[in-house]
Length: 360
Image (cartoon, rainbow, N blue to C red):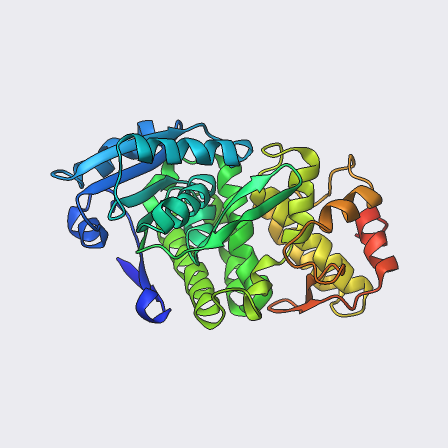
């Protein structure tokens, strides 16, 4: 088993990465406070893995709440349903909440934990690649609003993250590719060696080679843990983790939640960021082609949706957490493995990128 630590002083916590962790009571039980547990999962994951998890919670007062599956259900109405389930029991403030599922389940459960009785402990058990390498780590919790993605939320760290790689065996190919977008992101923003490793191993990742998957998850989590330890509340370097996200969130909102998976939108957004960086003279066209090739090999889209025009993009991008004083701050690239945050780009060049003008 691979174990990493997110170093945040008294709020530090481990990330466990291995196969077959869901039923490991000795691993899970030390992170549970009190005798009450509320497991939140969704209608896709629960039939596959809930019973295995419950076996590790024998002897506790365990309650479950099952959500509908999909990004379109990460909203205030579904969040209120979680609160209703907690209050119906009723659950006390020592209740431990467990998120069993992908990024939607983890985000909304974490936000519920942050709010219920002003904060109860929670554990992340991510079952998708995207959640294992990104959304379960770092304490970002949120729900979506029709006008903007993840605009209502809180920083709230879990007690631990348990990434059972065996859950990826039931992940469909599209969801696996979506997770690879976030894996590739770490290579682009800060880890050139990892990017080169991905170029060599992307086919084995797509084939779900367990050894290669474990290595990719470990290296992704190690990168994120280092960034979060340095900048927990995204006042500086953590913003780099949003490479492609301002473009990507605009695609998700503009196309309707759930029509583009988060990782698909981020992949296209990362290439748009690389394109703008190239137009600005910061990265070579050869590097952009190299990025596009890796994304395509991972089964990810690299062409923005034709349904969104430049003005709609700009309207959507203004509803973003990185907007400061009316300026859209973007994560851009000086080179592969070297990202920076800027609002000093040429707005005409941004419009060219949004319009998909050649060269893309």
